[in-house]
Image 1 (cartoon, rainbow, N blue to C red):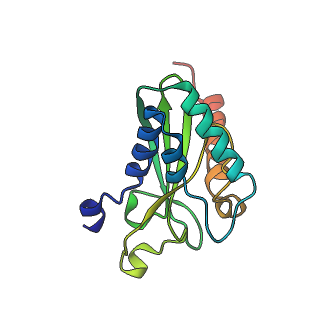
Image 2: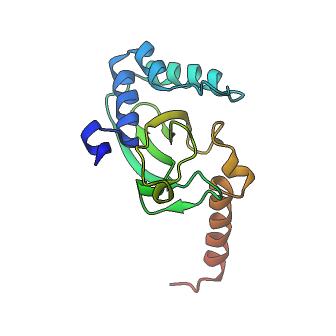
Image 3: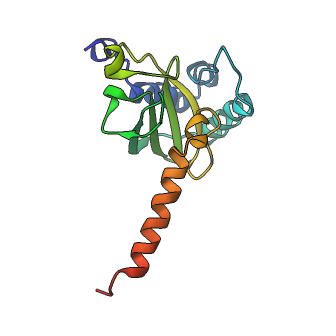
Length: 169
């Protein structure tokens, strides 16, 4: 309920950032893409400046969300059905005049326990934005635990094997 009343939704962070981009407001866009105050991840500050600059230069007038994946961020990262137990929203967005980008929006403290902690407010925070197909720089724990990209790579291989085995139609 808190998230509806305060608009603390992962999608709202993407909307705010892209709204600033479409207005040409680089200062606000950079402020909305928050750097982690505890640990600066290698490459994230440079990516933040570069991607924001590229998107401002593209002068987009519209965008559309293509897909949202919800991931847990505690223990063993894995896909879940929605935001209730998620600590990461990976949102794929087609941006007119630019390309398709992925927005990684995490809970402010990164680790979110969901039901196990009584579902406290998420405090969603934009942490990484990158061109679709590039690797994330911020939430690397999932990579080392066989999460996000490993999940996609495994499913890509499964799909390729299934396509090879599928009878002609």
